[in-house]
Length: 275
Image (cartoon, rainbow, N blue to C red; front, side):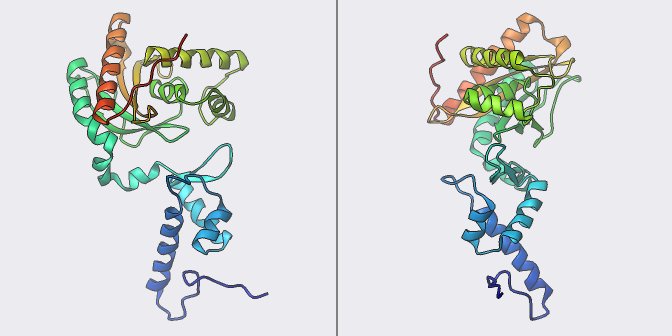
């Protein structure tokens, strides 16, 4: 049997290792470029057909990308999508991320107003990732590194993003373990779905020491022009500084800040769901 190879896959007959190395890089870039806004999810065969590489070659490239979080598998279809690890690779370009750029002055004002850390989170489909942060001026404070990812169902930012997902999608994420909630049974899942409805109605989510005993978090959604949730403003704070009254004030401040970011993005705030 004769196997036809694309030019990028042909053996290096010149003895030039640099040429072979360049071909590997070109192949990898070609694989990344197959993903688009219109087609964010692709399978190995689809990618191989589009870039003219063997499926085994594409599988190896994707396996490496997956290890580095440059691509991720959709838990339902097992097809691939671009991963948020690309943000870490392109760290200097974070300054050009529209939500981050627009949110920065609002986060600074929020941190000054509340005295607590403020952060901007984005959603990968199965976890929330920190892309901007203004640290509290207090000696004792809660901060998180840029690029840190969270998939805890009780995390305030994760609640915000899940509240925007369909109930079926939320149940799938929780039952598959993609979103972490140890010991969750059917009754607890039903209660959690009610909690997400409350988040959507109130406009902000609460994590009062549920993920970490000494930490409180509140988060509120940022919307784009379609009314879709594209980010979340988060305030993490030490629990000893947050009384019930302070919690309400932090939540309202977080909600106001998220709405300001939405407005600066030209976004549309959807009407709250009916009870």
